[in-house]
Length: 322
Image 1 (cartoon, rainbow, N blue to C red):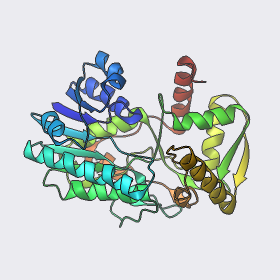
Image 2 (image 1 turned 60 degrees about the vertical axis):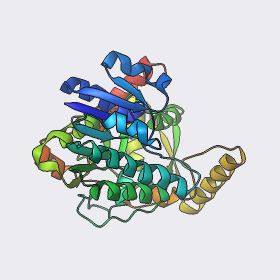
Image 3 (image 1 turned 180 degrees about the vertical axis):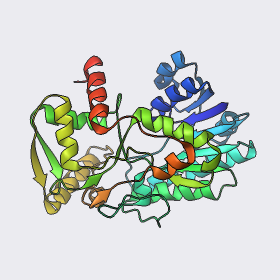
Image 4 (image 1 turned 90 degrees about the horizontal axis):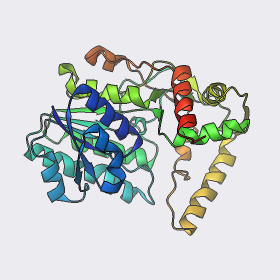
């Protein structure tokens, strides 16, 4: 298969590039900064400079492709308008270019934030009405709408928390846990689903190639459900450390996030830690049911949290990130 991959220089995209190589696909990566794509060279990935705002580069990138994997997206922005410009409008532009090129399938890597939080003990399947609670989630849902109405065979995958080698977000948890103490929002009882980066990449390939997945929204995760407190303790256990948890009540957490957001604005920076993000941090559950994807594609996650975090820790040590 000839496939186009956006976001190949990011954490999820890099794992997907490796999975596509194992699958024997001919991969083209649309990359804004070719210098950042040097690691793709050994994988045999063809790099095409361009971005989602440039129609000519999109047209050239999608020409002759069988499948488009759209991983690129904005996770931090200064406003909802900025989120929409990338996650909705950029996606719509790529879909339009893919439609003109008669691509046979469009796979969107969305986010659990697009579907919104789950009720405790009731993981989402993808069939429920979406109820995002942040600007980011609303922009990802708008991107989904652009895909669903774009006139192409499509599949949408909503990952939960993704971790694994090369991830810099969970790395922050490892660094705090190494000190023996780590904060948790609320009382630590928030229920969570998670997926290892390599497992997510395999899920995306399965979703793109199985006959029965077209026109469906899936949650790709391990069926294990943990809590935010258990997740932090599991990170500590992967390093052989006991971690003391510091609960952060909602009023305190929201105040701290307001300070973080204001500080970032004062220095001209963008942060994911905003007041709006508190609407995700203090929900009861962010859980998904991988059963529908397993049913339709045969995919199953191979890393539970214990083995996945151990693998992640080994990689961090070997790469000297810890």
